[in-house]
Amino acid sequence: MAIASISAVALLATACGGSSDDSSGGSGGDGGGEIVVSGCTPENPLIAGNTGETCGGNVLDVMTAKLIHYNTETAEPEMDIAESIETEDNQNFTVKLKEGYKFHDGTEVKAHNFVDAWNYTAYGPNAQQGSYFYAPIQGFNETQCSGEGDDPCAGDGKPSLEEMSGLKVVDDHTFTIKTSEKVSNLPMRLGYTAFAPQPDAFFEDPEAFGEEPIAAGPYKFDSWEKNQAISLSQFEDYAGEYAGETEKITFRIFKEQEAAYTSLLADEIDIIDAIPANALVGDKFKSDLGEGNYLTQPNSTSQWIGMNYHIDKKLANKDLRHALSMAIDRETIVKQIFNNAYEPSTGVVSPVVDGFKEDQCGEYCVYDEEKAKDLFEKAGGYDGKLTLTYNGDGGHKEWTEAVCNSIKNTLGVNCVASPTVDFATMLTKLGNNELEGLWRMGWVMDYPSIENYLAPIFSKGAASNYYQYANPEFEELLTKAAASDDPAEANEMYQEAERVMLEDMPAIPLWYGQSMMGWSDDVENVKATPFGNPDLAKVTTK
Image 1 (tube, helix red, strand yellow):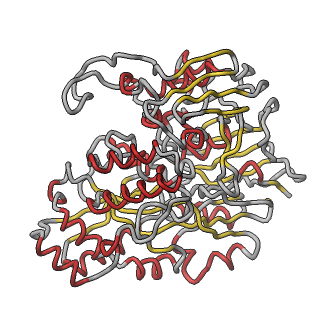
Image 2 (cartoon, rainbow, N blue to C red):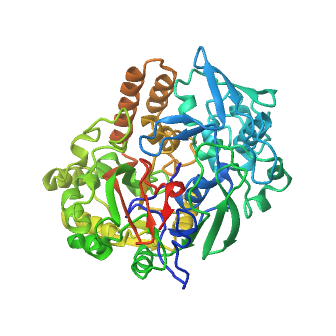
Image 3 (tube, one colour):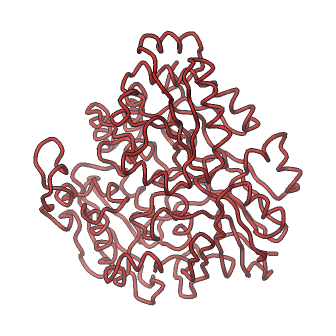
């Protein structure tokens, strides 16, 4: 999800971990009842346009309905609220809505609910994390900043437009979208959470709304006990095709994956979406949980190390960044820490999406002690302590320490893995450009496209571009790829853009993820989506 959303898989998982109480889930039987799943603390209030990580995103996934729904087995886009999305030129789109969809407050979902929500999210002064996703729509730039010069957001001027000129309401169930350039995969993007509609109630007080959100999906908000739990229940008037099975879903918030795992073994919760590293050793989790109570399958997660060499000038030398990458023995770390549960990566794009290409990183993602030393010497070395920051609530301690040890043993750099309290804290620090050194990061796709691993993360000004990465050649390739009518041609340009970015190396690829989930004897039909999340709407109780 969008950012940095990272989630899901065991170690990538942003922030799930443990606490427990005496409530056990899986009650009800006959498919209904309640399930209790592991969750983590959302970075922001639960607003679709301002949620770019998995802690809040997992909750909004089952609360929201969008124009498009992604098939939970294949990730292929399917119509949800949209009856049709038509275009003849990949620049002018007409969206027709199905009638009868309601928000959880009983009001009908109409065309203006999309247009108003999208304009609110895009408008720069509203500072929504999902703003960047509207960049293709005509008029987006005018809703951002009005300063002059190379950085139009450097000044204090008010944007010249509050609403994007590319959005028009035709009638209650029809609106049009015009993009600045051709965007061949625009319909595919519209299933991402940032494109959810908002009810009229949202605009009365967005801040308060985020504490008690209203959406149009199969589950409605019931309560949010901060740092403890978020509870949802079935929406009786849900009109879509993707209704939930159980009556209630409770996200029990944990600070550590190990604690969530322990709670599962104690039958205090029903589902965890990550297996902690200590349970991977010797496949211990398989005997702990029992046959039929766990799954492992490749998902869309990609894990890497990020850096902002505009903030930390000591990392500004490209040869140094390449040397650090070549000093990491990915295969040994994956074997020793993850029991070979993951696959060392050769790029940032996941193998599960169309357009993936191997070896995009080339030799820079291959452990080579001698070449790493040569590049390190060529770069002039590194003075002082090199910090690798990770979020302390996501099970990242073991592998970040292993990465630091690999760098230390190869190059002699005093690399130290250092935690933040949780993922939300880490993202806030990144957003404020407060983190020097290296930091762990990863990505779970928002929509099934190679573009989603590049533009929202590494484009200039993108919400998840914590690297402050900017390269005109990279930007031009993305623009041309988006405008191409030929998917194969577009993929080739996206692949070239990935190579350009990895040559600059603001991010060091580490490994591709895998869904590793466990569940109790009280639930059935637990499946993982290609995005790496459990398909909670389809879980049933015994």
